[in-house]
Amino acid sequence: MKKVYLDNAATTPVSESVIKEITDKLSNYYGNASTLYEIGRSSKSILEDVRIKLANSINAKENEIIFTSGGTESDNSAIIKTAETRQNYGKHIITTKIEHEAVLKPMKYLENHGYEVSYLDVDSNGNISIEDLKNNLREDTILVSIMMGNNEVGVQNPIHEIGELLKDHQAYFHTDAVQAYGLKDIDVNRDNIDLLSTSAHKINGPKMTGFLFKRETIKLNSFVLGGDQEQKRRAGTENIPSIAGFGVAVNSLTKDEKEKRITKYNSFREKILTELNNNNIEYEINGPKTEPRLEHILNIWIKGIPTDLLQMNLDLDGVAIAGGSACTAGSLEPSHVLSAMFPTNPNRVNESIRISFGSFTSEDDIDLFIERIVKVYNRLNKNRRD
Image 1 (cartoon, rainbow, N blue to C red):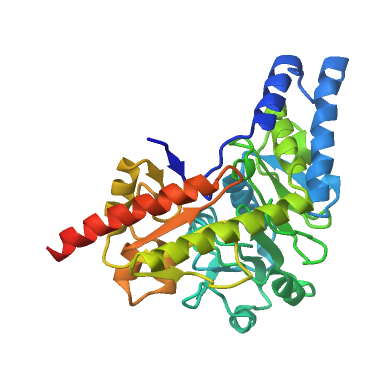
Image 2 (image 1 turned 180 degrees about the vertical axis):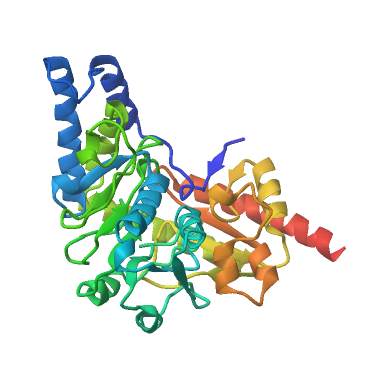
Protein backbone atom coordinates (compact mmCIF):
# COMPACT_ATOMS: atom_id res chain seq x y z
CA MET A 1 0.00 0.00 0.00
CA LYS A 2 1.37 3.37 -0.99
CA LYS A 3 1.52 5.86 1.88
CA VAL A 4 -0.01 9.29 1.28
CA TYR A 5 1.42 12.14 3.35
CA LEU A 6 -0.85 15.19 3.51
CA ASP A 7 0.27 16.86 6.74
CA ASN A 8 2.91 19.23 5.42
CA ALA A 9 1.74 22.03 7.73
CA ALA A 10 3.06 19.87 10.58
CA THR A 11 6.42 19.20 8.94
CA THR A 12 7.87 18.52 5.51
CA PRO A 13 10.21 15.83 4.21
CA VAL A 14 13.80 17.01 3.94
CA SER A 15 14.83 17.54 0.33
CA GLU A 16 17.74 15.58 -1.17
CA SER A 17 19.73 18.75 -1.81
CA VAL A 18 19.39 19.74 1.85
CA ILE A 19 20.44 16.28 3.03
CA LYS A 20 23.47 16.43 0.74
CA GLU A 21 24.43 19.86 2.08
CA ILE A 22 24.04 18.81 5.73
CA THR A 23 26.05 15.63 5.16
CA ASP A 24 28.87 17.59 3.53
CA LYS A 25 29.00 20.12 6.34
CA LEU A 26 28.86 17.41 9.03
CA SER A 27 31.81 15.69 7.40
CA ASN A 28 33.98 18.63 6.41
CA TYR A 29 33.08 21.71 8.49
CA TYR A 30 33.31 20.78 12.14
CA GLY A 31 35.01 23.95 13.34
CA ASN A 32 33.51 26.27 15.95
CA ALA A 33 32.46 29.47 14.16
CA SER A 34 33.61 31.57 17.13
CA THR A 35 37.27 30.53 16.82
CA LEU A 36 39.93 32.51 14.98
CA TYR A 37 41.89 29.77 13.17
CA GLU A 38 41.14 28.70 9.59
CA ILE A 39 38.96 25.66 10.45
CA GLY A 40 36.69 27.86 12.55
CA ARG A 41 36.74 30.71 10.03
CA SER A 42 35.44 28.31 7.35
CA SER A 43 32.42 27.55 9.53
CA LYS A 44 31.96 31.26 10.22
CA SER A 45 31.97 31.98 6.49
CA ILE A 46 29.18 29.44 5.90
CA LEU A 47 27.19 30.91 8.77
CA GLU A 48 27.39 34.46 7.45
CA ASP A 49 26.69 33.44 3.85
CA VAL A 50 23.44 31.78 4.95
CA ARG A 51 22.58 34.78 7.11
CA ILE A 52 22.76 36.99 4.01
CA LYS A 53 20.50 34.59 2.05
CA LEU A 54 17.90 34.59 4.81
CA ALA A 55 18.04 38.38 5.18
CA ASN A 56 17.53 38.79 1.43
CA SER A 57 14.52 36.47 1.54
CA ILE A 58 12.58 38.98 3.68
CA ASN A 59 14.32 42.22 2.58
CA ALA A 60 16.16 42.57 5.89
CA LYS A 61 19.75 43.42 6.83
CA GLU A 62 22.06 40.53 7.66
CA ASN A 63 22.65 41.79 11.20
CA GLU A 64 18.89 41.54 11.79
CA ILE A 65 18.85 37.73 11.47
CA ILE A 66 19.33 35.72 14.68
CA PHE A 67 19.59 31.95 14.33
CA THR A 68 17.39 29.95 16.72
CA SER A 69 16.20 26.38 17.18
CA GLY A 70 13.01 27.14 15.24
CA GLY A 71 9.62 28.81 15.40
CA THR A 72 8.86 28.06 19.04
CA GLU A 73 12.08 29.59 20.34
CA SER A 74 11.73 32.55 18.00
CA ASP A 75 8.15 33.21 19.15
CA ASN A 76 9.00 32.78 22.83
CA SER A 77 12.04 35.04 22.57
CA ALA A 78 10.25 37.79 20.66
CA ILE A 79 7.32 37.88 23.07
CA ILE A 80 8.88 37.31 26.47
CA LYS A 81 12.00 39.37 25.85
CA THR A 82 9.98 42.28 24.45
CA ALA A 83 7.86 42.21 27.59
CA GLU A 84 10.91 42.11 29.87
CA THR A 85 12.83 44.78 27.97
CA ARG A 86 9.90 47.21 27.61
CA GLN A 87 7.99 46.83 30.86
CA ASN A 88 8.78 50.42 31.81
CA TYR A 89 6.79 51.56 28.73
CA GLY A 90 3.72 49.53 29.62
CA LYS A 91 2.46 46.01 30.28
CA HIS A 92 -0.26 45.62 27.69
CA ILE A 93 0.02 43.19 24.76
CA ILE A 94 -2.36 42.33 21.90
CA THR A 95 -2.64 39.01 20.09
CA THR A 96 -5.41 36.87 18.57
CA LYS A 97 -7.35 33.83 19.75
CA ILE A 98 -6.07 31.69 16.88
CA GLU A 99 -2.31 32.01 17.33
CA HIS A 100 -0.05 28.98 17.59
CA GLU A 101 0.55 27.62 21.08
CA ALA A 102 4.13 28.92 20.80
CA VAL A 103 2.56 32.39 21.03
CA LEU A 104 -0.42 31.72 23.28
CA LYS A 105 1.52 29.95 26.03
CA PRO A 106 4.09 32.75 26.39
CA MET A 107 1.13 35.13 26.61
CA LYS A 108 -0.34 33.09 29.46
CA TYR A 109 3.08 33.06 31.12
CA LEU A 110 3.22 36.86 30.93
CA GLU A 111 -0.31 37.18 32.30
CA ASN A 112 0.87 35.22 35.33
CA HIS A 113 3.68 37.76 35.73
CA GLY A 114 1.62 40.94 35.81
CA TYR A 115 1.03 41.69 32.13
CA GLU A 116 -2.36 42.28 30.51
CA VAL A 117 -3.09 40.53 27.21
CA SER A 118 -5.99 41.35 24.87
CA TYR A 119 -7.03 38.44 22.62
CA LEU A 120 -8.71 39.56 19.40
CA ASP A 121 -11.78 37.63 18.25
CA VAL A 122 -12.07 36.21 14.73
CA ASP A 123 -15.08 35.74 12.46
CA SER A 124 -16.27 32.40 11.05
CA ASN A 125 -13.60 32.59 8.32
CA GLY A 126 -10.83 33.21 10.87
CA ASN A 127 -10.40 36.90 10.05
CA ILE A 128 -9.59 39.54 12.63
CA SER A 129 -11.01 43.06 12.43
CA ILE A 130 -8.60 45.97 11.99
CA GLU A 131 -11.18 48.12 13.74
CA ASP A 132 -11.10 45.71 16.69
CA LEU A 133 -7.31 46.01 16.77
CA LYS A 134 -7.57 49.81 16.76
CA ASN A 135 -10.07 49.72 19.62
CA ASN A 136 -7.76 47.53 21.71
CA LEU A 137 -4.60 49.55 21.02
CA ARG A 138 -3.60 51.70 24.01
CA GLU A 139 -0.82 54.08 24.98
CA ASP A 140 0.69 51.38 27.20
CA THR A 141 0.59 48.66 24.51
CA ILE A 142 4.16 47.45 24.03
CA LEU A 143 3.68 44.52 21.64
CA VAL A 144 1.24 43.30 19.00
CA SER A 145 1.79 39.67 17.95
CA ILE A 146 -0.38 38.50 15.03
CA MET A 147 0.51 35.54 12.83
CA MET A 148 1.02 36.01 9.10
CA GLY A 149 -0.93 32.88 8.20
CA ASN A 150 -2.79 30.41 10.36
CA ASN A 151 -1.46 26.85 10.55
CA GLU A 152 -4.87 25.17 10.91
CA VAL A 153 -7.26 26.92 8.52
CA GLY A 154 -4.89 28.92 6.29
CA VAL A 155 -6.34 32.37 6.91
CA GLN A 156 -3.89 35.09 5.88
CA ASN A 157 -3.87 38.15 8.11
CA PRO A 158 -3.67 41.76 6.81
CA ILE A 159 -0.05 42.20 7.83
CA HIS A 160 0.55 45.35 5.79
CA GLU A 161 -2.46 47.14 7.30
CA ILE A 162 -1.37 46.13 10.79
CA GLY A 163 2.14 47.40 10.15
CA GLU A 164 0.78 50.71 8.85
CA LEU A 165 -1.37 51.07 11.95
CA LEU A 166 1.57 50.44 14.29
CA LYS A 167 4.41 52.26 12.52
CA ASP A 168 3.90 55.45 14.56
CA HIS A 169 2.99 53.62 17.77
CA GLN A 170 5.44 52.52 20.46
CA ALA A 171 4.28 48.89 20.23
CA TYR A 172 6.60 46.43 18.49
CA PHE A 173 4.96 44.37 15.76
CA HIS A 174 5.77 40.66 15.83
CA THR A 175 4.45 38.12 13.34
CA ASP A 176 4.72 34.34 13.42
CA ALA A 177 5.53 33.62 9.76
CA VAL A 178 6.30 29.92 10.23
CA GLN A 179 3.55 28.73 7.83
CA ALA A 180 3.82 31.64 5.39
CA TYR A 181 7.60 31.74 4.98
CA GLY A 182 8.68 30.09 1.76
CA LEU A 183 5.29 30.48 0.10
CA LYS A 184 4.31 34.14 0.50
CA ASP A 185 6.17 37.30 -0.47
CA ILE A 186 7.56 38.80 2.73
CA ASP A 187 9.08 42.28 3.03
CA VAL A 188 9.69 43.43 6.59
CA ASN A 189 10.29 47.03 5.52
CA ARG A 190 7.24 47.35 3.29
CA ASP A 191 5.06 45.89 6.05
CA ASN A 192 6.73 47.66 9.02
CA ILE A 193 7.45 44.38 10.84
CA ASP A 194 9.77 44.58 13.86
CA LEU A 195 10.05 40.89 14.75
CA LEU A 196 9.38 37.81 12.61
CA SER A 197 9.66 34.08 13.35
CA THR A 198 10.44 31.22 10.95
CA SER A 199 11.27 27.50 11.00
CA ALA A 200 13.33 25.49 8.50
CA HIS A 201 11.40 22.23 8.74
CA LYS A 202 8.29 23.77 7.15
CA ILE A 203 10.17 24.31 3.86
CA ASN A 204 11.92 20.92 3.42
CA GLY A 205 14.78 21.93 5.70
CA PRO A 206 16.05 20.39 8.96
CA LYS A 207 14.20 20.44 12.27
CA MET A 208 15.42 22.45 15.26
CA THR A 209 16.61 25.30 13.00
CA GLY A 210 15.07 28.69 12.33
CA PHE A 211 15.63 32.39 12.71
CA LEU A 212 14.17 35.43 14.39
CA PHE A 213 14.25 38.67 12.45
CA LYS A 214 14.85 41.55 14.89
CA ARG A 215 14.92 45.04 13.44
CA GLU A 216 18.27 46.59 14.30
CA THR A 217 16.68 49.68 15.87
CA ILE A 218 14.83 47.77 18.56
CA LYS A 219 16.33 46.55 21.81
CA LEU A 220 15.75 43.14 23.38
CA ASN A 221 17.40 41.40 26.30
CA SER A 222 19.48 38.32 25.51
CA PHE A 223 17.43 35.15 24.85
CA VAL A 224 20.06 32.66 26.07
CA LEU A 225 22.97 33.64 28.33
CA GLY A 226 26.50 32.40 27.78
CA GLY A 227 28.85 33.20 24.92
CA ASP A 228 28.68 36.15 22.57
CA GLN A 229 27.13 34.36 19.59
CA GLU A 230 24.31 35.92 17.54
CA GLN A 231 25.05 39.51 18.58
CA LYS A 232 25.06 38.40 22.23
CA ARG A 233 21.36 37.62 21.93
CA ARG A 234 21.42 33.81 21.62
CA ALA A 235 24.42 32.10 23.22
CA GLY A 236 25.55 28.65 22.10
CA THR A 237 27.73 27.18 19.36
CA GLU A 238 25.89 27.51 16.05
CA ASN A 239 24.67 24.37 14.28
CA ILE A 240 26.54 24.91 11.00
CA PRO A 241 25.27 21.80 9.13
CA SER A 242 21.60 22.54 9.83
CA ILE A 243 21.99 26.23 9.12
CA ALA A 244 23.68 25.40 5.82
CA GLY A 245 20.78 23.05 5.03
CA PHE A 246 18.35 25.86 5.82
CA GLY A 247 20.19 28.05 3.33
CA VAL A 248 19.83 25.45 0.57
CA ALA A 249 16.10 25.10 1.30
CA VAL A 250 15.63 28.87 1.06
CA ASN A 251 17.75 29.10 -2.09
CA SER A 252 15.37 26.77 -3.91
CA LEU A 253 12.39 29.02 -3.20
CA THR A 254 12.65 31.39 -6.13
CA LYS A 255 9.74 33.57 -7.17
CA ASP A 256 8.96 31.19 -10.03
CA GLU A 257 9.07 28.18 -7.71
CA LYS A 258 6.68 29.81 -5.25
CA GLU A 259 4.23 30.63 -8.04
CA LYS A 260 4.52 27.07 -9.36
CA ARG A 261 3.71 25.64 -5.93
CA ILE A 262 0.76 27.96 -5.39
CA THR A 263 -0.70 26.92 -8.76
CA LYS A 264 -0.19 23.25 -7.90
CA TYR A 265 -1.73 23.55 -4.44
CA ASN A 266 -4.77 25.39 -5.79
CA SER A 267 -5.32 22.65 -8.36
CA PHE A 268 -5.10 19.99 -5.63
CA ARG A 269 -7.61 21.90 -3.52
CA GLU A 270 -10.10 22.22 -6.38
CA LYS A 271 -9.76 18.57 -7.32
CA ILE A 272 -10.45 17.41 -3.76
CA LEU A 273 -13.50 19.66 -3.38
CA THR A 274 -14.86 18.64 -6.78
CA GLU A 275 -14.56 14.95 -5.95
CA LEU A 276 -16.10 15.39 -2.50
CA ASN A 277 -19.07 16.98 -4.27
CA ASN A 278 -19.19 14.27 -6.93
CA ASN A 279 -19.26 11.58 -4.26
CA ASN A 280 -21.98 13.27 -2.17
CA ILE A 281 -19.80 13.77 0.88
CA GLU A 282 -21.34 16.31 3.22
CA TYR A 283 -18.71 18.91 4.06
CA GLU A 284 -17.98 22.61 4.51
CA ILE A 285 -14.72 24.49 4.22
CA ASN A 286 -13.28 25.95 7.42
CA GLY A 287 -11.42 29.17 6.73
CA PRO A 288 -11.18 31.46 3.70
CA LYS A 289 -12.91 30.27 0.52
CA THR A 290 -10.94 32.63 -1.74
CA GLU A 291 -7.60 34.45 -1.80
CA PRO A 292 -5.79 35.67 0.17
CA ARG A 293 -5.04 32.45 2.03
CA LEU A 294 -2.25 29.94 2.59
CA GLU A 295 -2.76 27.76 -0.46
CA HIS A 296 -1.18 24.64 1.01
CA ILE A 297 -3.80 24.29 3.79
CA LEU A 298 -7.35 22.96 3.34
CA ASN A 299 -9.44 22.48 6.47
CA ILE A 300 -12.85 20.85 6.01
CA TRP A 301 -15.75 19.83 8.23
CA ILE A 302 -16.76 16.27 7.29
CA LYS A 303 -20.26 16.31 8.71
CA GLY A 304 -21.22 13.55 11.10
CA ILE A 305 -17.80 11.86 11.31
CA PRO A 306 -15.68 12.58 14.44
CA THR A 307 -12.19 13.80 13.64
CA ASP A 308 -10.33 11.11 15.57
CA LEU A 309 -12.40 8.33 13.99
CA LEU A 310 -11.77 9.65 10.47
CA GLN A 311 -8.06 10.15 11.16
CA MET A 312 -7.67 6.63 12.55
CA ASN A 313 -9.44 4.98 9.61
CA LEU A 314 -7.49 7.00 7.06
CA ASP A 315 -4.27 6.11 8.85
CA LEU A 316 -5.17 2.42 8.54
CA ASP A 317 -5.55 3.07 4.82
CA GLY A 318 -2.12 4.70 4.65
CA VAL A 319 -3.18 8.36 4.65
CA ALA A 320 -1.67 10.92 7.04
CA ILE A 321 -3.81 14.00 7.69
CA ALA A 322 -4.30 16.16 10.79
CA GLY A 323 -7.18 17.11 13.02
CA GLY A 324 -5.63 20.43 14.01
CA SER A 325 -2.16 21.63 14.94
CA ALA A 326 0.38 18.81 15.21
CA CYS A 327 1.79 20.50 18.30
CA THR A 328 -1.46 19.80 20.18
CA ALA A 329 -2.25 16.46 18.57
CA GLY A 330 -1.73 14.58 21.83
CA SER A 331 -4.33 16.70 23.60
CA LEU A 332 -7.95 15.70 24.06
CA GLU A 333 -8.95 19.35 23.89
CA PRO A 334 -10.70 20.51 20.69
CA SER A 335 -8.92 22.87 18.32
CA HIS A 336 -8.72 26.33 19.88
CA VAL A 337 -8.70 27.81 16.36
CA LEU A 338 -11.97 26.18 15.30
CA SER A 339 -13.45 26.87 18.74
CA ALA A 340 -12.75 30.59 18.25
CA MET A 341 -14.27 30.53 14.76
CA PHE A 342 -17.34 28.43 15.67
CA PRO A 343 -17.99 28.96 19.40
CA THR A 344 -21.60 27.70 19.18
CA ASN A 345 -21.00 24.72 16.89
CA PRO A 346 -19.16 21.93 18.74
CA ASN A 347 -19.96 19.40 16.02
CA ARG A 348 -18.02 21.44 13.47
CA VAL A 349 -15.09 21.77 15.86
CA ASN A 350 -14.99 18.02 16.55
CA GLU A 351 -15.61 16.79 13.00
CA SER A 352 -12.97 18.68 11.01
CA ILE A 353 -9.71 17.63 9.38
CA ARG A 354 -6.72 19.51 7.99
CA ILE A 355 -5.18 18.51 4.67
CA SER A 356 -1.90 20.23 3.80
CA PHE A 357 0.18 19.96 0.65
CA GLY A 358 3.92 20.19 0.12
CA SER A 359 6.49 20.32 -2.65
CA PHE A 360 6.62 16.50 -2.76
CA THR A 361 2.83 16.07 -2.97
CA SER A 362 1.89 14.52 -6.32
CA GLU A 363 -1.27 14.22 -8.39
CA ASP A 364 -1.19 10.50 -7.60
CA ASP A 365 -1.22 11.32 -3.87
CA ILE A 366 -4.35 13.40 -4.33
CA ASP A 367 -6.07 10.69 -6.38
CA LEU A 368 -5.29 8.07 -3.75
CA PHE A 369 -6.46 10.38 -0.95
CA ILE A 370 -9.78 10.98 -2.70
CA GLU A 371 -10.26 7.28 -3.36
CA ARG A 372 -9.53 6.35 0.25
CA ILE A 373 -11.49 9.11 1.98
CA VAL A 374 -14.56 8.32 -0.13
CA LYS A 375 -14.28 4.66 0.86
CA VAL A 376 -13.75 5.45 4.56
CA TYR A 377 -16.52 8.06 4.61
CA ASN A 378 -19.05 5.72 3.03
CA ARG A 379 -18.20 2.97 5.49
CA LEU A 380 -18.32 5.22 8.55
CA ASN A 381 -21.44 7.02 7.36
CA LYS A 382 -23.20 3.71 6.80
CA ASN A 383 -22.25 2.55 10.30
CA ARG A 384 -23.49 5.85 11.76
CA ARG A 385 -26.88 5.50 10.05
CA ASP A 386 -27.21 1.84 10.98
